[in-house]
Length: 257
Image 1: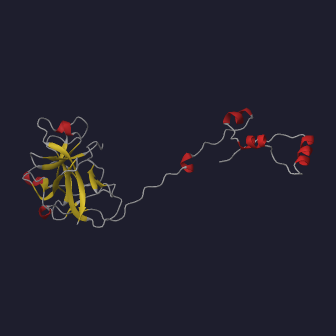
Image 2: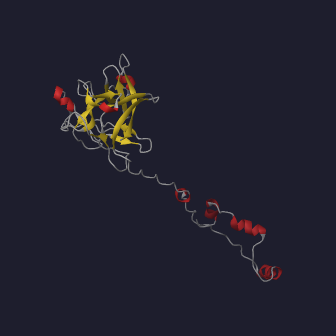
Image 3: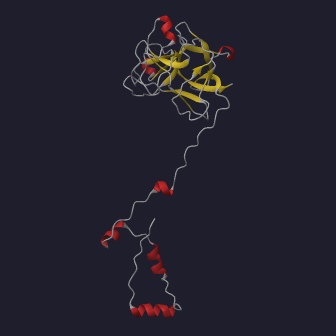
């Protein structure tokens, strides 16, 4: 930052007297020194016909540290634990589907779904999760299939999606009718999204992001329906739970093998 200083014009007599009293050295008095060190305001500069001072660049004076990238996972192979919002353990995503070809939960690791994640950061997503020992090898990704009662996610809407096996679909894209899903084996032809996952590399918490057909990306909640015994996604649990409140929000956490 440049500090602009205004110098007073000294008379010749004052100049000589100053030299004599200070041993021939010109130095400002305490009052003058204070005046010199004082930052001139833009109003004062404008009165003297000068241009305003440049704005202070606080981002340069106080730079924010860049976020540190996550290192590689100790293992990109593991399980996905399912817990309640208060941390209560429910189980793991199960290796096999329920009767509707939708993922559910198990309390045993021996019957849990094994998955692989990208081996290096960033994990802020979106990325695919591959079901290593999944039931349907033709649709190997842990993905979301648009719900039978609608799959437009927004506040006040009951739109939802089932978690099932899917083919690959592009990131940040509306649901694809060509990706293919495990639910097609029972005649259900809802569109799917696979590349919807993100992970906090410190806590290993996995979150989902559904993309609507208009490309909007609303808040997305992972839920477990305790009566129908399946995992799914929605945006508004209150709107989804019309009548009995069977579904409740859950947290996915990656557990490395």
